[in-house]
Image 1 (spheres, rainbow, N blue to C red):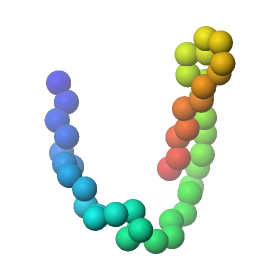
Image 2: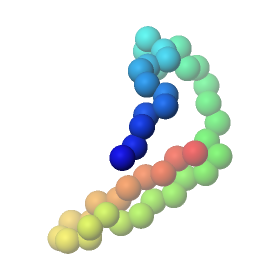
Image 3: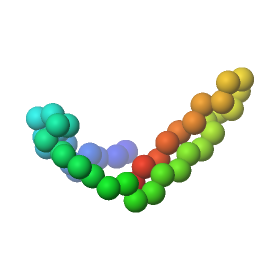
Image 4: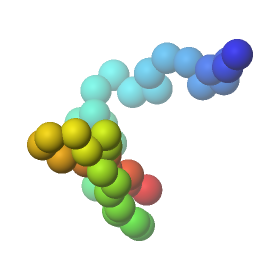
Length: 43
């Protein structure tokens, strides 16, 4: 069981965010059956 402690949007739309800085980026293969799909992690 999991509980979402941070429900609902905090912004009306993503245009309110402005600039942000990516610190890391990585990827991993997801169920590589046939055409490889990748999962992206951005932090």
